[in-house]
Image (cartoon, rainbow, N blue to C red; front, side):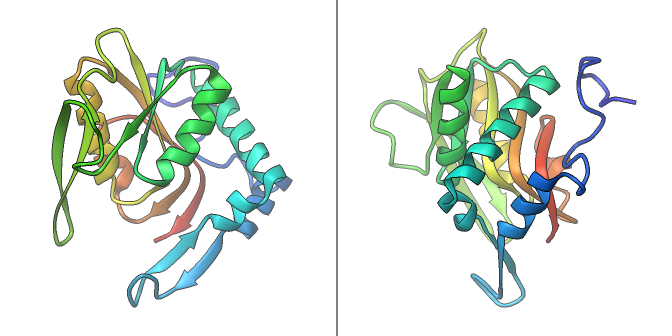
Length: 197
């Protein structure tokens, strides 16, 4: 049984195939959990040890590329939300030979921009894209390190869609379980690992 709406060659999972996979065990063990950061009660999933390990980072991007291919997404562009989305988005875009689109906080892009505000638990935030970044006929994949509540992803999807592009999905290193982020993204999502929120 595959994911509804995806090609027959798509994997029958939304995340890690099996924790018997040595790569996934190593990856999970390399993500550092920092309790009570940035505020008390938060279990922060620190990916900097993954980024610091060149071989593991290469293997991670290889896995992401393999999963993107298996899901049949075939993007023409990768959109990376500020700031860790720049890291994974750029690496994936370079490997696929497609364009990279930075999704920035307001006031950071030098040309004409489109802005979307989105709700946070306490207040609002906003993201911007250059108005000429993508358009009709473009197929965009969102790439970021972490899927939590889905607000950033939904805003990125709205920005790209408003310019006429089709957003094919979102790929993440980590999905935090229990925050309903997957349901709030307005696109298909795939995470390599899941951690409790």
